[in-house]
Image (cartoon, rainbow, N blue to C red; front, side, top):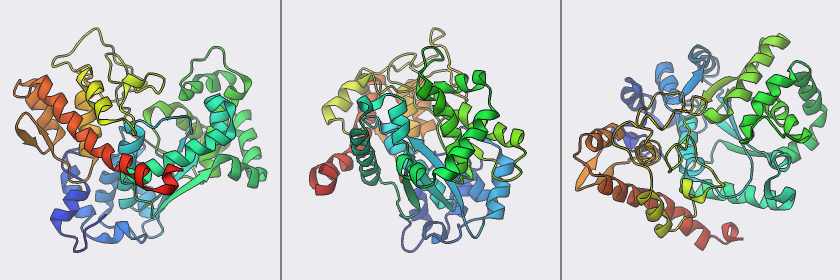
Length: 393
């Protein structure tokens, strides 16, 4: 939360140095959050440039910055809507937990309202939780509780259940979905199926519907901005292309795709829920965190044998070091973050990277410091589920 007197110190604690990789980001923090307007549900604080910079810090790619700027200018007083959808499909890893929570907080500070599409029907189509909708709903409620405990602001966050909303407003949803379908080729839809973590072969008929329905969600929810991961880029681009094909002059979504955290093993372009050791999960014990991080891939120099996955990582990264990735996108996503390792305290992810590459910070010290920092971020989540009767249920 913003400090009561809105001091520069308090504002920097909300969004720490090093949270963005743009040259103008630090100046944007100080000015964009200089008053509490962005956190009260009223008009956002800061100039247009500052709010644009704050939103751009969330994404690895923006389609397009010009449209984003126009959106903020048009909705300066009324706010704008961002959306992300998630399948309730099991355990929540740290990217979906801490990283997402902090990104949502930035979007709200810039004046947005964030809509989460709890995609229970989509989890059913993707064969999650054995196709049991009751279990899927339980998992969805669990994920919401994790976000509360992880520090996500809830003052302008909405959770919409797909099954409830589509049944209630089916007369709007299905005609829109059919129009998306008739303007999309089978080949294009099949390529979009990678959003489910599946290849193009062996898809069920339900899974072929998945991209068409996800594209429809954007318009059904009246989202101005699609704020999903880079792995969802194909279907978000389908939504933009659909607008061109349908001649829709209004409602073309802006895409703000966030970074995909590496898996902890060499060559893992993203985390995998099917591989428990590829990620830190929000309910992992202290022992689990230390074991996984101490065993993580952690190169000091580029390894040509580890290829870049261009669909998962849009920004160039020669090291592909998951430990440094966690430092940048998890540790320094937290308000007021610093990083302590090897007897030194670092104020930015770049400083950690430079010390590690230069040899001033050993691999063992980097990993020990990272394990301590990550465990501290998970501690409130563990405590929430131990002490809160509703969450524990």
